[in-house]
Image (cartoon, rainbow, N blue to C red; front, top):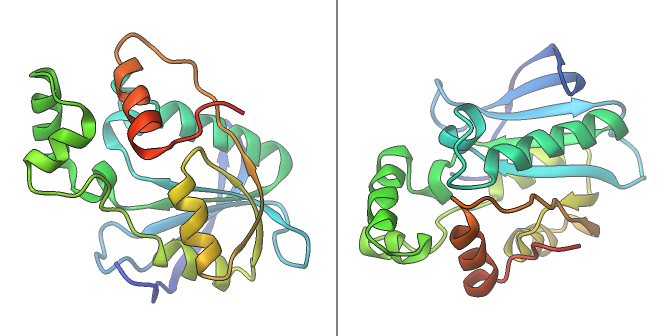
Length: 197
């Protein structure tokens, strides 16, 4: 996934979270473009509220409680729909390992591995996601200064190092559930995720 994403189409998208424009950007896979949901005016010098969200079919669509991804997505859409901004939806399922491998990782987690050990057992790094496409989309939208909605310090560093100024971090706090408390603790203790404001 490189940073050469270009705009394919834009359309109006009214949602339960507010009124958006949905923009599809080339991802290298014609059936799975990267998406940007834009609320309000986002060009100009003022920092823009931005969420960079990587696809999680099980959480985003089916409401899985193994993770907090679907709740993070819904919360970010509510926030951006109310205040304006951009949600970038990257097609890098399962922290970049794909859906089938993510489901294999679920099975390993059920045998006692944490989320990162399961990835390693399958031959992957802890997190295979990359952000050049998100950076390219922000730049195409004329956005260089952002309030980033995230708990992930690696995401902040990736955008900052590419010249996108992260003016502030907006935490997205989801109360843990019995099914995901170990998952969230692993993200916090092993990858430094900032799960509290």
